[in-house]
Amino acid sequence: MNDTKLVYLKNNERTIIQVGNVKFGNDFVVIAGPCSVESEKQMIKIAHAVKAAGANMLRGGAFKPRSSPYSFQGLGLKGLKILEKAREETSLPIVSEVLDTRDVAWMREYVDVLQIGTRNMQNFSLLKEVAKSDKPVLLKRGMYSTLSEWLNCAEYILSGGNPNVILCERGIRTFETYTRNTLDLSAIPAIKELTHLPIIVDPAHATGKASLIPSMSLAAVASGADGLLLEVHTNPKEALSDKEQTLTPKQFSELTKKIRDLKIFMEGLN
Ligand code: PEP
Ligand code: MN
Image 1: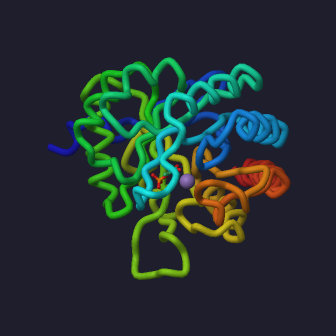
Image 2: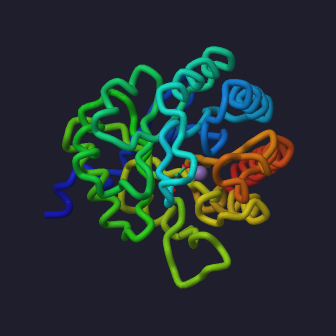
């Protein structure tokens, strides 16, 4: 039964997903930006900074899935309008999380890629709704999910009519508490064996610690990831969410340089 699923790799034919002028599955795509869109000034400043450091796409949450109802919930529509402005200024395509089935249809006007977060990976109503969208979907791995459960969720989107799914490994819950989650690096080559879909890695939510992000990013590159998703803020200490795992533009720029060097080194090995 399994091999009839759309999500499985057949004849080594891989899906390439074009967003703006980057191609997931072909180019190495670096997505960067703040955890949350906080204000126009903040977002535009960060957008220019990440672009200058080599980001190919911009991220920023307008709807935030917070553990506490008292934490910052995001600016909603106002945040999306700010992202639209940041795209106009930098030409970087936008990815932002959709939390609710009622928001999928109208959000397409503001974003180039719809993100489904870890907490919603198995929200089957949301998966069926984004399956009807013409926008690519960035499907994060559920924090308690096996690869098979994750791929079944991608199958919901593919079988519902949307072939453009980008998978994102963002760490899973284990007994370890030093890190926020445990980055499952083996998921990268395993996913490549199983499916034709591109896979990117989010070392920020995986580790929860800015100090661990450079090494985990390089490990993800070496493991064959198709891209990275990183949180960057001009003043991480003041960020309204995920400040501990957020890089400064300088740290981000140093990291993108190392990524470029590692990619060149890896090409020499082939
Ligand atoms: C995010 O990207 O800011 C986010 C909330 O991610 P996750 O769903 O992986 O926790
Ligand atoms: Mn975050």
